[in-house]
Length: 534
Ligand code: NAD
Ligand code: MLT
Image (cartoon, rainbow, N blue to C red; front, side, top):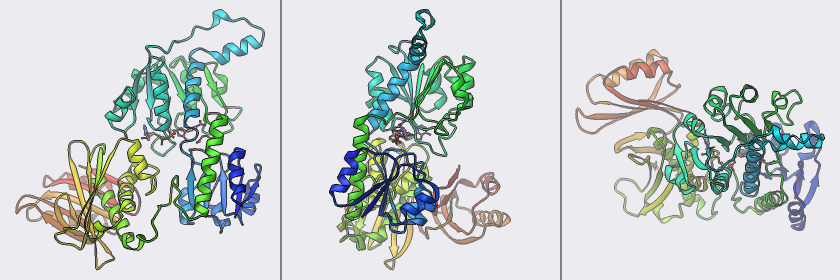
């Protein structure tokens, strides 16, 4: 098999592939049409952050089985296109975590003690002892934005240096934060306002892009900002201005919206901004780790074994697959619906299997249920990494089985909890292959899970369903199907509508203005979009 490597990785990884009998070609300059030509007969492509793996690459590479990313961030890889072309994308999420955390700590000291500035002055022949008065970290407060793998390692290190820790991460539990001696807060502004030093460790997502701008920097007043995660999370112009104006004391950055950092970047003109050229993972150990992990992922993919670090491919036991396959979608849909109907941070997920399906190994089905729960949160999730994500974020996952079942041959129930309330959604297959949602939060329904779905809770009284239908009709939304269920006559009712179009905001507002409508949630099952109005 041919492995094309287009960004430098450590020899240990290249050797591992060559030792397994694969042909390894390295070309670290290749780009554009030349890349499309080089990848045309490749079975694996290995990159770091330098190569843009676009849809055109997948179109040109008909024999490609896997793209291995020797590192964590995959923002340079079009994962959707990879999935469309049936190509596994696997990263190496563990190997450089400690290096990135150490670099964050180094950058914190660098900016708090003006080490690069003092170094430059001394190299220029100036003994500027009186020019620098640093900030001691001991007894100061660290605000951590994103307590994932790198954030946790930073927390451990700076905690041991005597800092108090405050965390902002909407996807972890307070208990998880406490395990690292940190207090979880619900508001980014609060974390920044309390921090003397704020470190950023989120991925670059639509949700995190530009999340730290002028307003947030104003909250950090007098503190330091460190970003060794991804460019684009912090507004660079606003940061340069905030440091220049003395709103924040200084900043240290290892990653930038455009890399290499353009020579005209305002960050380069500000004395108290320390910059490094994306060196977070540049240690020998980290590079060897990620190269070896990536080579192992490629070897597994070639051997058709599960790739544990795959971001877009479910792993599967071949013999059980035909029996469990139809329930994978049922579980994912049930998870997706349940997560979108329950407000608040999810603290645990329970997958229950009843009837014939309970006799199977359902690990993959549960993973698919988790994928359904997490996907609306825009996590980079698939059935392979969903259980790991749950574990890392302190979300408890339980699985239970019973061969007994009341109404169906097999039933999958996904229950999500937010610490106070829980909500269960049940799904099954009619006639062996026709997926249905058969119960939502205790209401017996019969909903076909596809496209735009509206779930309405309303009082059970004459005219309500007609009213909802009229409002949808007035907004050109066609009802393809509906199912109504109620607790008791005159009690609360739940109605599921399958719609041909998305519901405009104005229609939701009109519905909610009516006292008979308790809650309306629009769920789009074809993608992660959801709008919840209550
Ligand atoms: P991770 O996925 O383990 O953790 C990310 C954390 O961010 C999660 O806990 C998640 O819940 C949290 N998060 C997501 N959205 C958030 C939001 N809106 N607000 C607050 N928190 C949010 O990722 P990781 O492995 O810890 O990597 C962290 C970052 O560091 C990534 O951007 C990665 O690419 C980058 N990185 C950079 C280098 C480098 O060389 N500079 C090296 C390694 C990693
Ligand atoms: C990563 O995402 O792993 C880092 O940005 C390190 C890198 O590959 O340079």
